[in-house]
Length: 228
Length: 357
Image (cartoon, helix red, strand yellow):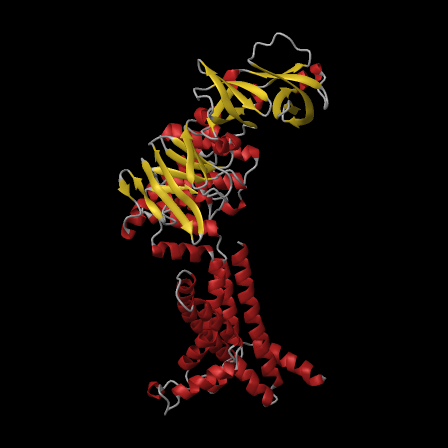
């Protein structure tokens, strides 16, 4: 039992003293996952709006496929990207395997379906009278989309927060695509995985606390904004 | 001016409008009344280009609005519509009213001026920064009207604007509509299933039934002289009696109906099958031994039902054929009206409105 207490004490020490390794890993995690989330948002919101407000054959099937991909396993994304990006793979010439860029790409692909799907849900939740009112007020196609998205902003923000949560907490793709290279591609989840296997309990707990703390902060900010 | 020419609309198999014709004049309040599901909202949505007609055309100041898809937005921006369900954007009251103006890229200083004036008109001055979602249904609907009116529409379309509101909020909306029409000379097309609201607000009423305007006229015309039995029934005339004209002398006909003869003012010739429409409030109640009644129609019967009806009593009387009549509480008490009481009823020949069957 003592090793758990010792681990927690060491974790607190690492966090309070702003241990350089811990800080660097945290910073990279935030940078990779935030970037992936921002890019995914810029794609998912227009894409979701395009699906929601256009009628085309196969629309229902497409939405079903997107919803199925909510539970896309992270290691599958990692494996597919690895095969594409490895030196002899079709995209090997890019030379980005085991870089933060590749990790951003992996996380973005991972969260794109859930963010698109939840954007569709958010937009379809906008009251029909509000949609009619926007049109009736003389909106152009673009103005219409802008106002509906704006009206659904709280629900879309929920989708963004969920996407970010999935991105920063996944480990399968990060380890396959990033390679968990010290000082280059080591993020919170891969570091916890490695430290635990090496019996560095203190470091693992510290990184775990930070990961939870990030989730708490994101959730709090979103809640405050939604209730404002 | 809006002209509706042979407007038709069906949603798949379901035919909503078959042949709607009307001309809505500048500066008038035109009420579309009709039972639920008669296509009132559909017609307004067609005018606002939210739906496309299956047939016919709609002209705004002489130009067919559905003719070309590219001009739809320009036509729509000349109109404004308020919907049945009070709906506010998740923004401040100010931003709610500003939306249509911002879509038209009106300078912000001008928007501010217009909104201040509009809030004054709707009685919500000082509400600029309030969250619109926290307003009551009636206030939200007034904001919706302001949001529509600030865009200076050629025509303001109101789709059952008070259907979801309580009586006090309804009165506020009605006052506002009348005021906007009078002071700003705003043309208003309003739909309602409340015929009394149509009567209170409208210069002219169109009764929409079975996909066509069964009648268009002033409230007086529609309520006093309904064109057929369906309109008569809808505008609240409860005594609609089928019969045949037996004879006609100098424009006063004798109509045989189920064993009684009803005298009525009508030019219709003997032999015509007709419906005699008599408003309950035009029927006078007398005691059974009543004498010296000047009205042309005096019938004996028995009271079969007494119901409270606002400040009045609503009576059903069996005179061989059933009649309904309205009398005040006081009269009912003085005459000792109760179920089973033998009474006479009377009504003037001129109170009978006769339509051809």
